[in-house]
Length: 265
Ligand SMILES: Cc1cc2nc3c(=O)[nH]c(=O)nc-3n(C[C@H](O)[C@H](O)[C@H](O)COP(=O)(O)O)c2cc1C
Image (cartoon, rainbow, N blue to C red; front, top):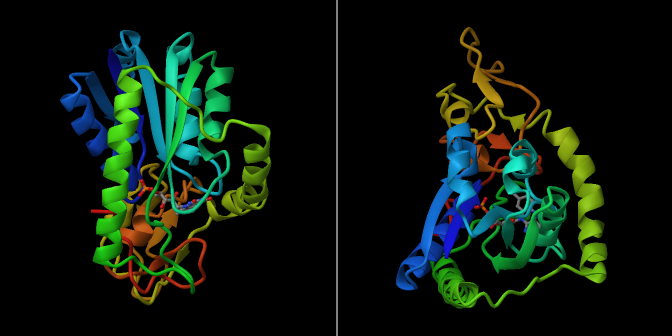
């Protein structure tokens, strides 16, 4: 069996899960290849041709797949036609059909989606009043649960024992309650994330790490003035919010994070 894993991770949770699955594939002598969607190139498409299964992994945002993920799927749709697919979504609490959401898009690409699963992780959202980063103990406990579930998931997968979590009408309805308000917010926020210019030191890190090239430095700006321009295509992945050395960026919350989320590891 050969599995190609395609993933996106904003703040490290999904990347961590990929490392766990890779470990499991190695234990089970399953052949695999892993690609980050944001680094995937046209020449990598050939790797999909001889895959028995193509596994998509991403964080759930408002019961949806991040924009960068569904845009990726639409871009390479032809490569998925007729292939067998699996979806793995990471989430903090609940998404209803956060995995089935992408599975429906993949089915439109004529992919046969055989497996849908969700993994619970700490929340990568760190801005606003009610969000705080988890303690090291909580992260260690979360890792333990993820590792165990990854092991069982991989064993089932290797034996082609598949299940599809959240692929039914009531899950879709529950997902829609989050999705409908979130997608309106997402459209607005993707055009304008918040910077606290009194904190920003124009270091340029956010422009380098943004997975969708949404940000660029304004070189002639002065202290206290806007120092970063936005292209209006933010994927709301929270990487810049969680990495900014000055804690100057927020997206959903009006205030930048008190404590940033540095990933499950
Ligand atoms: C903008 C945003 C929206 C989110 N929406 C949901 C959600 O609807 N349901 C949920 O359970 N978790 C939600 N989360 C939590 C993430 O899905 C979760 O922390 C994920 O594991 C992050 O993965 P990453 O570190 O690979 O980016 C959201 C996080 C962000 C930043």
